[in-house]
Length: 289
Image 1 (cartoon, rainbow, N blue to C red):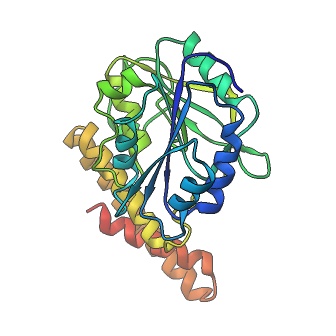
Image 2 (cartoon, one colour):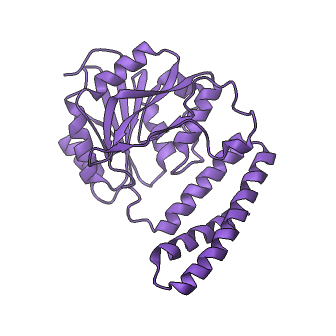
């Protein structure tokens, strides 16, 4: 079994990823300490995910939602029954490398100023996956709005986040207005505003497949979801003047790209890349009105 450092409650929100969920749970079990726990919240999957957890992983707690309540709300559900003072939010399409649990515990124990930390992510082929950012989207339009916030890291990818329960509860958990996308961005900024720094656990390595719960979603729909999530983030954290500048910049860029892409498509009607970009910028123009 793993180390007896401060207990961790690991929260996994699943939605139609039963194959990946099993690999995820298999990677966790051997690293759990006696007081650690795993909570799986299933958002009404149609692939038997919850039943698999019940039958094959009885050591994991399960919550079966009758409908897909979204990523943010499902995580908050799990937090309400979690016992640990360290909360690890992990996607079902992720797998822990050996030693990840101990590395996460040690880091949180040694860095008391950190409210939430990301982990080192790799792609399935072992290559590095970008998982942290030093600035917020379109931050250059906000002036000195974020000067003075604790730490240097702005936010980390939500596929694997290790958080201090105290910090999560201080900001009220995930903002449930975010159904999917933008939750990690919003949570990290809220935690920094509450006086905690965001960290990065380089020694805690996690394999992340990525995008599996949305693998059947059309690209245009996926893009729209991400843009709308970003707009919600702006509306919550940015002043109106900055939002107006951001929208104007996106509209102008979209109009320019649409004009050039129309010509490219006219000259190369079979160019699928240009057609995909055209759809992207047409959507951008519509959303950033």
